[in-house]
Length: 62
Image 1 (spheres, one colour):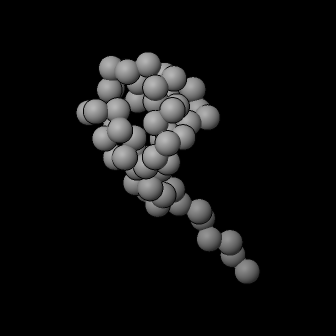
Image 2 (image 1 turned 30 degrees about the vertical axis):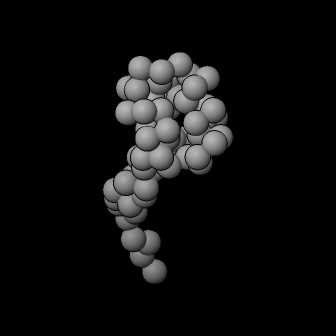
Image 3 (image 1 turned 90 degrees about the vertical axis):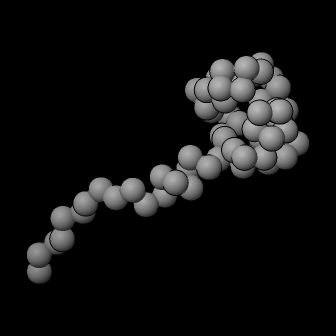
């Protein structure tokens, strides 16, 4: 029985981009630079409203 070759897909990428991982330093820094806020402000926003990028940006006033 032949094994099918696994191909790379974009599945999951859109979902991943819609989230801010508060524990990932590079994601916090990216969001802080994008919204011109501090990294601690981004982490607080993630704790307060969850990890949805839209809600975090709204909370930070972007």
